[in-house]
Image (cartoon, rainbow, N blue to C red; front, side, top):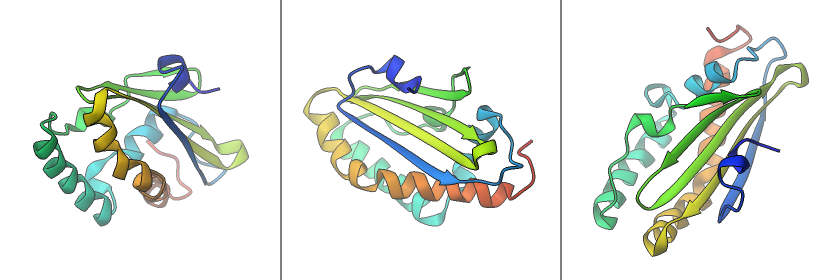
Length: 149
């Protein structure tokens, strides 16, 4: 089980996204979390969607996005943990590399805070896997077979 479910044991929404990585990749979950959630190196479509997120935030009167919202807080076992408790939802995610198996996992759990959280997350739930997968693949391509430093 993931540390995301220690934070949110009864999420309203949850998903796991897994991609293949090189078996000589870093096993450091913090290094992978930084690479995946590096907005500057995100695919162009992800950057465009982040701009749309800011428009939605204004309309829904929720706080604007901050890069720190996707910064890992701590390492628990072999997972980097992101824990963001916002006005409209509580979001927990973990990044877990398993280079020996050639796999990288991102687990996400979300607890809504009222109607605004549900409305905000409706389109996000549809786009979550493709966005997360593209960010993970981008990180893996930038890193390639060399270890993340």
